[in-house]
Length: 124
Image 1 (cartoon, helix red, strand yellow):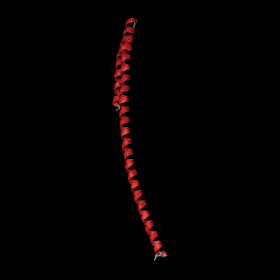
Image 2 (cartoon, rainbow, N blue to C red):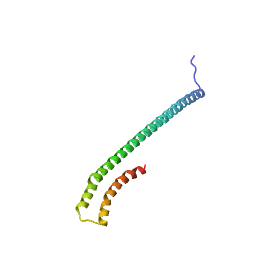
Image 3 (cartoon, rainbow, N blue to C red):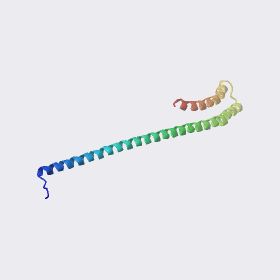
Image 4 (tube, helix red, strand yellow):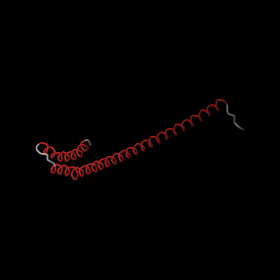
């Protein structure tokens, strides 16, 4: 003999089913939140490692660019500027204070190369 559900028992069954579904949905949401938190942490860790590697690469590139620039400036100062100044002084009729000041220009060029090397390194 089939049993018929009364309105009250139907309502109780529907409530029990809804509560079960809500609990399952809440569990799914909780698991999804935990998975999202894990993924966000993994992404932040990955981003931090990329930033660190990029900063190291930029620092290496900056120092190598600095060294290349200083070497070029040194070559120009030592091989071009200083000999040109010395030969111009020797071939001219300059004497006294003017000759002394022109003679110091080579020293100033060498000091400029040293300062151009030292000042960026002091900022690091």
